[in-house]
Image (cartoon, chains in turn blue, orange, cyan):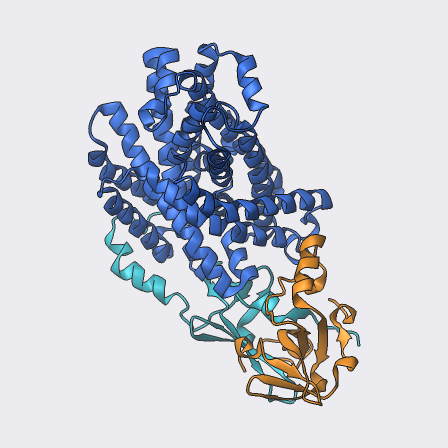
Length: 409
Length: 113
Length: 99
């Protein structure tokens, strides 16, 4: 169990990238429309984020500098500012969606309208950030979020035709009346979500919060190679459940209730209780991740004191930024906008932020001044460059596809 | 003079021909001893790039990966070193060099630390 | 020409680097600009500039992946002071280490 506690940073980070509110609905939606024909995209995304999170973790362990420090340093003040604005907007929009997601989970559990839960959810997120130690926050929500493994149990209990699922997974492409355009749109959305910038911001800043040094390189790597594959597996399980329950009937997934239904169908009241707790923990965890990342990005661009490793009054601007972002979340959600739709809009900014985030990481991970003997090897560089190319392609194609398919209709 | 002002100054040779732009300033810590008992950082020379670009991303020092290195150098053109003693004077927006382009050595040949 | 002293490239190694308090480890801002005295007999780096404050070269302790300085009389965290006074201190628990 103690070993599991050591990798909760990676797990919590992965939760934000693979099973936050946007991904919960998107994975189920994709499962319902395409079956397992997008599974390879999830695998691709897991590999990509593993590569770059490992680099970020290594940079932190060796030099103590988090990712956004490096972004401004290598891109310069102006391009760095552009990267900041794009990344910050993605993170903020996601935060708004997560607070909404927490409220939706509470609505499903209680029957009380989510708009009434929503300010309470935002306040609770702030309170945890204000009062709870980083390692405890990471452990509690990382491990509780793992309850989403109930989807994997449910999938097995539903007794699917495994051959059919495998057949879908190995035959990528649209099916039925889906087009290549919608297939590509969702593929890019999933890939972009797996590699969303705030994951590396949070992971590297978390490494500083955890005071990683050289001897923690192994810990950093364990976090990466346990956390993100787990996140990917949860993604696949959710898609699988939707594929079994909704694909044959041609039902579209649109609500959180539909996402969790398979767990209730397969495992009854117990399954429902566990999945609700898991969804609550995952969305709350993602809300923590994104609100802290809003603070991390701005503070690290300007060089302000940041972090939960100092008393709040020693990092005043950092905490004020987080408070403002949470207040903004409440204001936006009060307009009764669908929280999941909010994540769709963030795709636009993600497209701009992705290459600008990962290029500096690759450069620094190769810099002997920063890394001494721990710089990238040739093989890693090769794959990292491939992914940079993929991210660039995804960036260029994202907005046109979004317009073309009217966000996946 | 402020570094941000100096960066991007065009470099012209003695015939007035535009050689390139100032991309960075090389400092060596062997200047006069300061009150803090450390040697001052002496301005040793200027790094000049052929094309209009001020971001070198650190690639003038040959750090990998090779593909990015090649891309950056394609964008920069030639990268040369102008020692400080070869600087005639600095005017509004321009650095006048005593030598000509043929006299400048490529940056790779300057001793590294 | 052999260089005995350490070699740096001003834009690469100094500009946009994080400034850290040598004693407390506190984060003090980024290097926004560098002041060079080009008119002296021996042209040298005289100061770092951050948030419109001048940090004389003598107060630089170490240059690494971040730059450690002794701020002395300088206050480089005015923004934090303002935010602390007007917002953070008004919230209970601002001075507590998180448990």
